[in-house]
Image (cartoon, rainbow, N blue to C red; front, top):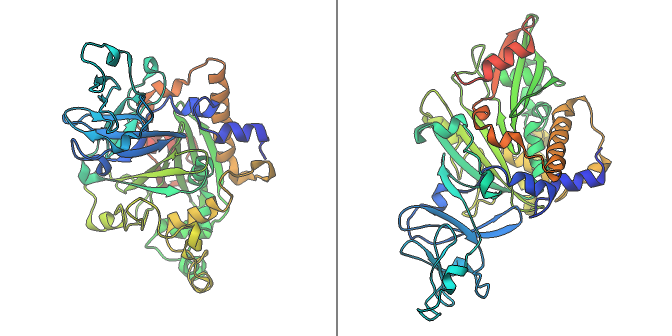
Length: 428
């Protein structure tokens, strides 16, 4: 249960709100590189944290993200001409560079210096790891880009996707912190049968099906939380899933393992839950293998349009969505899987979006399996309230602390959780 006032702080992200101010202190992905790939190409609409913006790549290949409206008469810059290192408003020809400077004002007399007095709102942007990122906080506090492991990988080892999620960012992100729901929401009915649990070809499925009430351990770290879910594997071993939460909206999901006692060679996925406004968010997924190129099967699984995070349309809207009940089949639910919905992200979306655009957390009843969610809320609320008092988030400047990974592994029951999880989640 959460107080109404705290729920509002947690979920409201507009300009000037406590959480909106906090999120603006961090680099955020807003577009895939494929959306803005050509210099002097068409401008792209961007809505983030309740602000309407326009992104463009200038003649020199630099990214500009500026106000969606010209400061002259508020005409839409989306219709502008992207040419000669600037975006020109088609109403009166005013032209702006990537830093928001007015570099041409042909509707004014040449002798006037008016263009020197006019700027359009602009934000720093960069291309990194298959996405375009933006920083919207105070210029003097702009941090270095976080040292994510996947941000250094060649394109052969990384696939980046995004999809629209039709609810507030908090309830979407909280689904990524919840390791207990995999024993139910994402299960095939066959996996729950005793004979299936004895299979040896997919350890992750076996252990999640065999022990459906994991024990959680939450370690507070300088980057966020290390969330360890422990299940019984056999008489000697525990099965561990280590999820990472990185302040303020990043999660790393543990990989599935089919053989062996660790997950060093297995691919894993990270998510960024990026608020569009208070009622919608983008779910960015960074799918990678740090030690090798993604194989043909993985490329098919992670395909941006048709893979496991899809299928999606040309606007990154899932084809299975709230309007069509996520294409639920009651026959499939009866005979094949737990939900009757095909696809892990569609199953997640169905339950997350069913809570409403903004979940009313005053009516919740949280249990022991919700430790990670409780810890997340406390930390974000504390950070937002401290920022209101003038205390800047130290996490924003700890870029090297984000160089971690998630993990899935077996460990002898004598191994302590701290030794096991820290060792396996450090970047070697």
